[in-house]
Length: 111
Length: 117
Image (tube, rainbow over all chains, first blue to last red; front, side, top):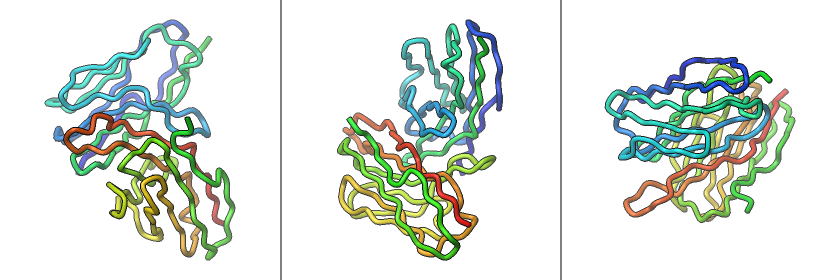
């Protein structure tokens, strides 16, 4: 059974710092991996999607990498801003079309 | 562009009452999903539908039923609500992962906050 973990569980940084969020999964037979952000009381917003054949994806200040063989993905956020404060979730999709989510990393960016 | 729309946004039920959560997507996606999100448990899959006319159980299906009414709509029904079903429910859709389908990104609705008393 696929299991997804995320480290750290929570992170507090001053504005302007570059930071890395980690996601690990136990079964490397994935179709893709997706990063989401969730604001309190809100739904999930898609940030980046990495197909299993890709190594990384970039969108603005966000960069996500994927190392399928080691079961790891990282989300890099450059020059963090208070508006980046949210919970970040990674989800892996298997070939059965199901998504398995990690527990999330709660990020606070202090002004 | 609406994306994934869920109704209602909030609901309070008494134990034993029934209700249906509605979900509709306008992205012509094949796959649709229902998740519940609980503190400390993360997001767990209740049911999913890989295509119109098919549904399958996820990790926590007990106490729920689903209907894939058409390609756009996927409803979740609680026949006899229990306090353990107090949760936030999310509907999601994606393009599926068949060969040739380029967009497999998942999109989520804003959630339904359900309290069973």
